Every structure is written in structure tokens, then in C-alpha cells.
Amino acid sequence: MNTRETLKSVGPAIIVAAVVLGPGSILTSSKVGAQFGWLGVPVLAVAVALMIGMVALSAHLGVVYKHSLCDELTRRLNRSIAIAVAATLFLIVTLFQSSNNIAVVGGLEPLFDSADSPLDSSGVRILIVVLVNALVIFSLYAMRSLYALVEKAMKILIALMIVVFLINLLTVMVAEPVERVVESDPPADWLPLIGMVGTTFSVAGAFFQAYLVREKGWGLRDLRKGMIDSVVGISVLGGVTAVILVTSIMVFYRTPEAAQLKSVGDVASQLEPLFGSTAKYIFAVGILAGAFSSFLVNAIIGGTVMADGLGKGSKIGDRWSRHGTAAALIVGMLIAILAFAKEGSTVGLITVAQALTVLGIPALALALLFLAVQKDLAGERRTPPALLAVAGVGTVVAFFFAVLTALKLWDKLTGS
Image 1 (spheres, rainbow, N blue to C red):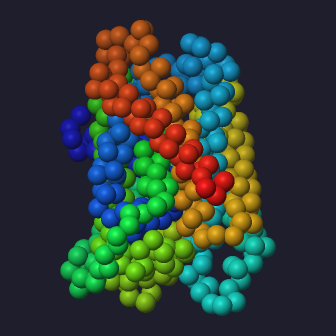
Image 2: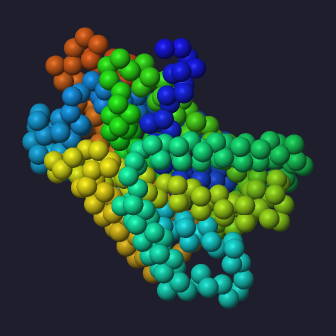
Image 3: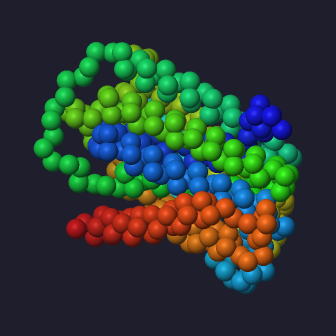
């Protein structure tokens, strides 16, 4: 197969990238750029490299194993372990889903920028997320061929995001420089940086890559496709995130507005060099598009793996996978409703939800490593040492950030 045909087959990792690059990732990377400046760039680069390795490893496992990941865990360990792994991923997905719900309301905020905005009412916010989730659940059960529709939609979304944010960055680069106000103290809150790592190095998304390559029908002959797909798809994820991050650095870092991003409208101001006074409306549309695009697919990840862990099937169109997806949507909605009851900024709520996902990463990383080192993987089915090395480093990083996140969240909860 020539290069053109191989690149044309890219799809599974693009789905992972589009889901990971949701509204939470956009807002978190913008906040990192404003607070941490260029420090965020090397951190992002490391997260992208680790994500490429983990996605490639998962794709390899999806191709070389006869059964799905949770089925293999059940056969080699026991059903309880498979259920525990699936439940961990399901929890991570619901936390991501809660940020998607919050982002839907946040994306509407600039459209009602007035002193008596209806979105100031918690009842209106709750009504919005209930209606959105009801619509998505209806679509879930109405659609027949889920994978084909999802792949096409994610490719379109990624293309649009690349165009909009890249043009915006180029416009910022040629605009008049912003007067800087030097800050003497570094940011006290590292949670946004942790959140950006969690949204980029998403082992939950990587874990699902094994399921996506099986949906694609790839076999041993497609090992090279899996590697190219992983590199291209996640590189796109890293590239778009980097563009958003650098734009935020050039507009916000070391300015009076830095670290004051308390609404989607505040973050939207980074688009003013391109769109002028309409920036907040353009950004609102982008946030809403990101939320709706990842709304269903993110839940599909949790629902499908949960069904697989319970031994009820591993295809995203299976009956129990759809039921699990609906459950993920509902739980994510309930978490968001509870979040609305707590006073605080929309960006802050999303950032905390994104950072919380880091806590479940180590368990998923260990599951992938366990399956990657099985003795019956010999010959062309053998896991490449380079993938094992990157996955090993990723697992260590996952444990580090899990501990760091737990400590930061404990400080926030206790007020210390």
C-alpha cells in the first residue's frame, strides 16, 4: 500500500484526538498559556509524545489479540479485574462528560452577555443540559452505523479547528505587540497545567484505540497502518493544542488579564485580533461545536468498554454498549448539575473536572502494559520494545501526576 492510500485510511486516532480535544482542552490550554507562558510548550510536547506511544501500543494490541482488551483481561486474570478497569475508564469518561455539559452552558454565555442574562439562573442551566442530553440519547439509539458517522464527523471538526485557530495565531503574530506587565511571583495554582496534561495524555482515549481499530476491521497486515494512524492523529491533537496555547501566551501572558479567565467570554478575547468585537461569539460557536462533537463519542468510549468489562459485547453499536453510553451521558449530566450548584467560574469548574481524570490513568496504563508483555505475543505479534519503553515512561508519569493531582485537590477541598 502506498503512502497516499495509507494516509487515507487514517481514522481511529483522529476520533481519539477529536474527543480529547474538546471544550475542556481548549479552555485549559488557554488558561495554561495565560498563567505559565512558554513553560506550557515543553510540557505539552512531552504529553503528546507519551500519548502517541500509548495510542500506538493500544492499536497494536487491538490488532494482535483475537479478543477485545477486557475479554483478554478476563481470560488472563479474571472478570473482576476487567470490570474494575472498565469502571475506572467509565468514571474518567463521566468526568470528561461533566465538563462537556458545563462547556455547553459556558459556550452560550457570550450570546447572553447582559446584566440579566437567563443563564444566571441555575434552573435555566439545568434545563439546557437536560434537553441537550435528551437529544443526544435519542440520536444514540436512532443511528445505525455509529462508527462511520463518527469518523466523518471528527475529521470535519478537526479540519475546521485547524483552520480557525491557525489563522488566528498567524494574525496575532503580525499584530501590534501587547504591552507586558512583569509578574514577580509564579502561578500558585498548578491545576491548569495538570489538566492540560490530563487532556492531552489521555490514557482513557488511548485505551479505546484498540476498540476503534477492531471497528475498522484491521488485522496483522495492518500493523503499519496502526502506527501511522497513531502518529498522524495524535500529532494533529498536539498541533492544534499548541496553536491555542501559543496564541494565549502571545495575547495574555504577563498582561493584567493573565490568570483572570473566569468565563468563556474572557478566553474568547484571544480571538479579537482576528474577529474583532465579534470574537466572543465566534469562540462561543467553537466551544459549542467542540462540546457537541465530543458529547456522544466520549460517552461511547465509557459505555462500550463498560459493556465489554461486563462481558456484554465490545462493538460500539451493540445493545449493551448503547445502554452504557446512555448511562455515561446521564451520570455526566448529573455531575454537571451538581457543579452548577457551586458558585465559581465556568473555566474553573471545567479545569477541576479535567484534572480529576488524571487520577484514573495509572490503572489503565498498567492494564495496557500487562497485555503488552504476555509471552504468547511472539513473532510479528510481539510488542516492539520502543512502544514498551514509551508506555513504561508514560505509566510512571501517570502515577506522578495522579499523586500530584490528589494532593492539589485535597488542598482545594480543605482550603489549605
